[in-house]
Every structure is written in structure tokens, then in C-alpha cells.
Image (cartoon, rainbow, N blue to C red; front, side):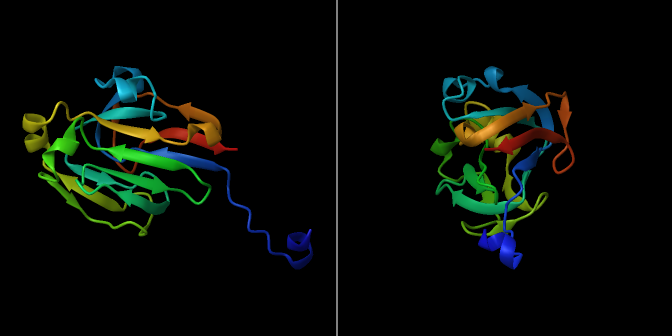
Length: 166
């Protein structure tokens, strides 16, 4: 009531678009060669078989968490959407080797801002897979999730998911 009286409507947009954070080939979540991701234990999303070693922000929001081993990071949108970008599979065991993180926890990011650079060759030779899961970790708080499967993804350009938060 007071918001209406004083004109301070700070409502947050419930709809959000998630763009490809990495250029490469789209991978259905069920086809990610790791049961934790393929069985959606972490949440819903998709994978990318990268064609280059650059990760950009797929949403506008904040860097919520940078893993100490630099292989993954969490982002949070203003509307509460939480997104995990996990570069490769079993890459935690690389202890940060092959990764260069360009942001810190708490940083504000926009779609297309560089987040991480990674050595694609090094990861393909030293990890289980280069396939990189992109996961909405709080799918239980989403009203609607529409994933648009496609063959090739271009970072910062290809819209992959439309989400409406509850």
C-alpha cells in the first residue's frame, strides 16, 4: 500500500532470459556424461561442448560464488534466479590449473561480461570431459522454464532459456 502511495514500486522483473555463456555445441542435460547433472540433481539446464575457452555472463546480476579451484562459479539475478556455470566435468581435481577467473564474488555483471578464461586443450587432456553444464540451481523457485535446444551456441548472442520466477 505504501509503495503505491509514495510511488516507490521496487518490484523486480520475474522473467529472465539466459544466454549462452560459452560458444560451442548444445548438449541436452540428460546427455551430460555425469549423473549428478544428467539426472538434474543440481537443477535443470543444459550443457555446452565448448569451441573456445571463454565464459561470459549469461545474465545480468551478481557473482554469487567463485569456487576456489576456479572451475565453476555461481551467479544470481536480481529476481532471485541462481545459475551455476561448471566448466568441464571432474575439473575440480585440476586445482585451478588451466583457469583464469576474471571476476570476484560480489561483482555486478551484465550479459556478455567476461567471467573466466580456460585452456580448452589442457582441460580436454586432463579432465573427464570439456562438456560444461549450465544449471539453474533453484528450479524449485521458478514458475516456468523454457529451454530452447539448438545445435550451435554463440556466447552472448544465443538465447537458450526463458525463465519466469515465482
